[in-house]
Image (cartoon, rainbow, N blue to C red):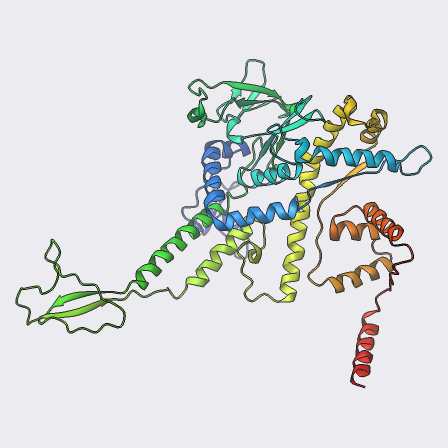
Length: 501
């Protein structure tokens, strides 16, 4: 039917007119075997949820490239120092309340250290929690964090606890006794707003460690105590999808391909030969024989020996490596890098053929992707965590923070989070460009500091003042504005002439 279309008015198939455009992807004769059916977001996740997560976790454990991607993800989103809080509440006279803001920042910083671990297990810092959240987002497609206000095991009376996404029972579905609906373990109302989470008391495999898992037992945790962190890709989506869904198959194929290549290399390196009877063969096999009367002989490097009469030798020399080995590896690995949204050169540690311009372009694209994930993490978890923590500190006498001011800080939204920044590959050029941009009014020193170092500008200024106070008149720092590019070239030329003289 490729040359015909159905005319509704005439009630029959008619020949297609020349020059008329059709959607080729929907043409029945264009992609034979591409049979699809459109279903809702949850209907597409439900039958494959456990299998997808299981396979993704296997790649997380055993695939070197996925391990490196996860390492890059945590290093670029959370960074070496984690996400930093800056409180910026002003007093009634309009000036920044440095004393109060500093107290809040110090308390939040101390509450994230291992000494006062913010995790219920007592084993993680706030940075560790951020790293795990990003890893679980990528591998499982979702991170489920249980907020526990009033926690008595640390000074700040607040802790969070990760819940394995496989404990959110995907079998809880349909209408519930209270009139709400269950969607893969999430209880939702008529607007698809989460009401509660039905969590198994233990992972289905925990029977090994003493848990009785024959009869599933649930904890119904209200949604107000849960942060369900996942990227919503379609309307009505209730559970997250692993970020490795599209590239996981390629990663698995590349893994098995490399295994086959290694086996082939070992076979090729182990040179072998076979004795072959000729027309002079009389039926007696000289030398050592095995139980099957097959002649077996081991040789040493550099040894030459006369073959027994009646036997010729046939060597086994496989053709290795294959001619298209590198090209095939690049094609598959580029697909994997595209699927996870990271730079191919970084994930696969391959900088062959990379020049300054291409590396610069790749880094710019990469950093925009990392900043997008930083923004997502801050808005969907870090800010929620901080506001809930601050509510408890208003009632916590051990916090030492003014409760009224802390309440105003939250109500007036006088705080922000700063994620890590990046230095450029050529620091001198970057500094010169930033100075010119500031001079032209295209940016501000505060924004430059935050984007390049991820530090709070107020902290940088305070450190400079402290240094100048300590140095006094003993140290003189000569701050000079770098010359313009043309002036810099002229200065460089003049310095060269003076040096020659």
